[in-house]
Image 1: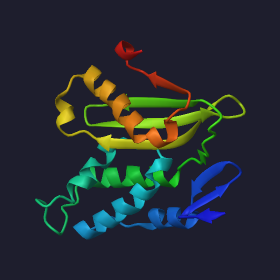
Image 2: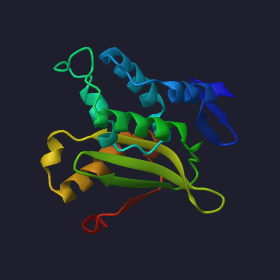
Image 3: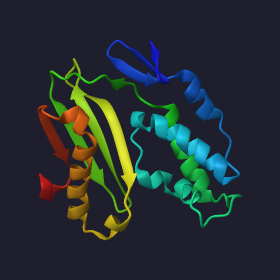
Image 4: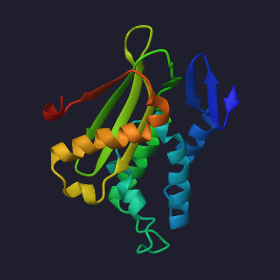
Length: 179
């Protein structure tokens, strides 16, 4: 079944193949408007991929008011563009949430951004992603590593509240101090 640009069925959710083909065929943008259009399309499907916000930062920077309308396409922009396209075109299927089971939240923070994976165990007892989210850090970049890691957990739980409210939940961290 197709619903809001997603293919639903068999307890799984995936992006429409036509949209993935559109992303694959996208040429490097030349204007701010083209950069915004590309980012808008990928944002809609970014829940399917684990993309650190820092990967997208060079492209996001091109959309700020202080940048000219004709973008200065650098090697960093091309690398970000290629990385995002590759991630979007190899997106995994997401598991439809099973509200009778336990959720697993995995967060991570870098100096530039934070990311999260919401997962549940599948029939083979392996983590199956339900959702991915990430964001760039702004003033939080000045925080210590433990503060950024703790912030990642708090921010993630707030963002995922509709999924997680009243549910059994396990938070997994790779930062030793927060275990």
